[in-house]
Length: 237
Image (tube, rainbow, N blue to C red; front, side):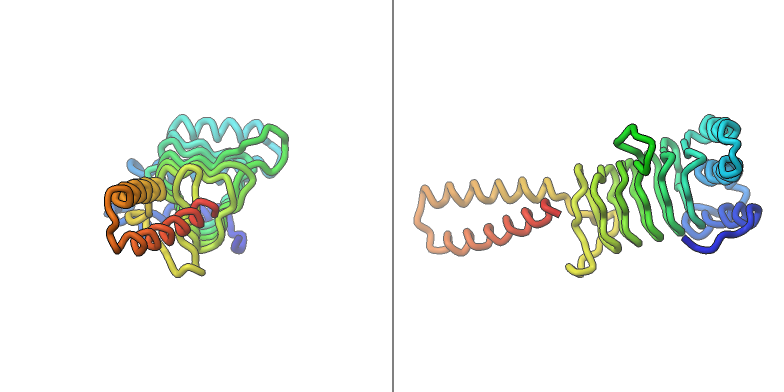
């Protein structure tokens, strides 16, 4: 987390973020009509301040009012850093014990939820620079590392290392700094599709092996074994 700043400076910073994160924004006047995520965050800042001084019921009333206006549910007890941006925003849920760092971006229908009923840290931590795609669910007391990316509609139930990309249900790590592989949201791999392709190729090779004695069967077998090992490694992460 970065340094703490004053309330009104924080609000001004929140109102300034869409200009740098959303290329569709043409005028600051659009903030009044097209950015429920920004206004949900402004109401959250107020509710969070009130919650911190002990007026928890009033804070929940404010959070409920903001949810009715914006369709975004942010618990006032959650901790959210600077320059946080909720793009589009409808259906976003951020739980009570969530911790969100600076410069984090999430899209509509994202849930930062819990999986336990005991009163402890039960919601995720998102470190600085994380990007969470549309419809993703991040569940439990897990940590999404700095600058990590979560693919759209993924369900994340385990920690994601910094600078990594996770995708799928449940989410798997498909790109890491060690592998030198990084993905944008428009080019995320489909592990399930790749596994089906592997199975189809494997079946075809077995059929060829049964019906002929082609000299390149052994070479194809070796290629498929390498592909299989890669798929297994990606599924185990």
